[in-house]
Length: 65
Image 1 (cartoon, rainbow, N blue to C red):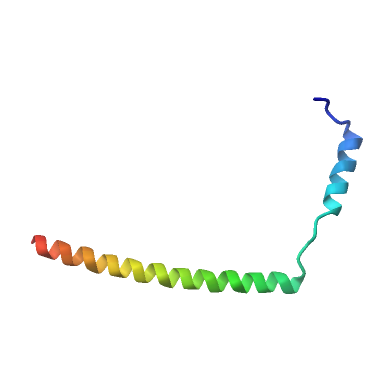
Image 2: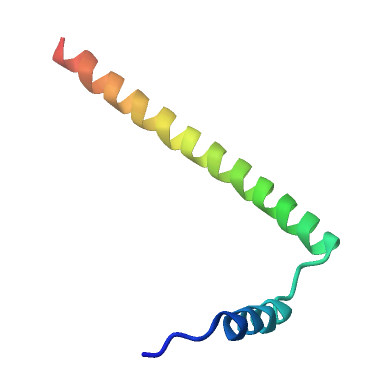
């Protein structure tokens, strides 16, 4: 496979870079808010699951005493 010349490579990079569609500031803020909401929901969910498992393990170990 032949390697492209440096100039050709730079032109290809410029062409591909021009195809990038950057999000608007509104889209970025909306996405950030959604990520924070989902992170909070998941943190609360895993906190609850961890609390339940901790209670079960504590109960089981108290039976072994």
